[in-house]
Image (cartoon, rainbow, N blue to C red):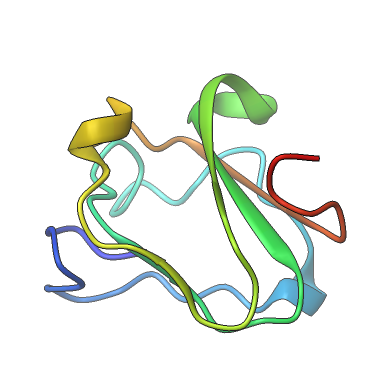
Length: 89
């Protein structure tokens, strides 16, 4: 997860095998502006802590959201869930 659109800035890196995050670290919490998922699991980024609120799903194996403004999630990222459920499922 990057603090700027189009994968710019110092990223927050989380390995899918480390599991989900109910409360993102303060330096990226509420600042996520683009996402790339290089894992074999899907990643869901949530607008609120504890995997609540609006979310966006980032597909596995290189799925990217370069500009989440169209999803109304720019700078509102608060939690992350990694799992095997496909996006849209």
